[in-house]
Length: 207
Image (cartoon, rainbow, N blue to C red):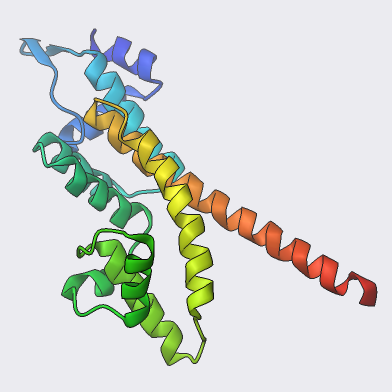
């Protein structure tokens, strides 16, 4: 298909497509002659991914470019998913840079849930957050970590099962990024509703 048809099928303006081509987010089409190129279903899929990352997840062009370069370079899926998680969930770069020793609480959770005892951005971010809570004298009991981590373990199992299904790397990034963003927001909203419900039961008699 030509640029006009690509624009029609993807719903992305020709000007935006040309911008993504210049920025390297979209691979060049197959050259027909000096002023014309042909595009394929792969370009439609890539444009769908770019639009979702921008409009749904809210990533910048720079962030999108970083993920797409990793995809085009053929990095392993585990590293790609870690990069998606770091960007989408905005894991604190200060927490991920050093990869220092873990906190006893985070280490206990890993053992309790039988999670792999391996370094990751997510584990570093958890360590940093637990250290922050400790510095603010906010107690985190073993019972609380047990309850929270069990619930999250069940949720994460469902998420990753859906995320790892697509064969296309672009589709993998799309399902992972949108899923992480929307599911994390869903969890927060469910938590807010649960907290509000418990508060209503406890205090409605005083109203």
